[in-house]
Amino acid sequence: MAYVYDDTNIFARILRGEIPNKTVYETEHTLAFADIAPKAPAHVLVIPKGPYVTYDHFCAAASAEEIVDFSRAVAEVVKLVGAEAHSGGKGFRAITNAGEHGVQEVPHFHLHILAGRNIGPMILSED
Image 1 (spheres, one colour):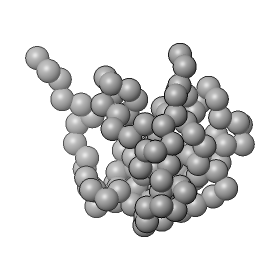
Image 2 (cartoon, rainbow, N blue to C red):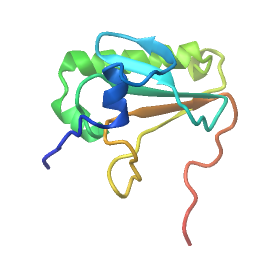
Image 3 (cartoon, helix red, strand yellow):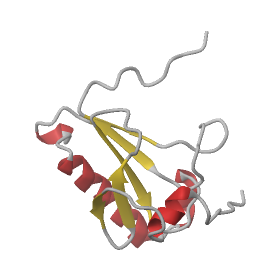
């Protein structure tokens, strides 16, 4: 599959400093910031700084350094919001949407970290 990155998307504009954000954590390859329409007491978006459209695109095309940096940034964000399930926190949900069926709204890979309350069932079935 060919991934075409749109560098006018809102996350690309945030990365260029054109749109402000409330940074939670930042590394060389990753930016984490508060969601502007939070769905939980803690709702942080974690994005790679590279031009990746979806999670599978990131996994296929990012360097090992970018992938490790992103993964460790996610761990740090979870720690910062106090949701580390393995060390006394009550846990979190991590969500990424990809493409039309995943209802992806911004064409830049991003991971939602939601915490601070029971997030509810993973998905509601359509019977």
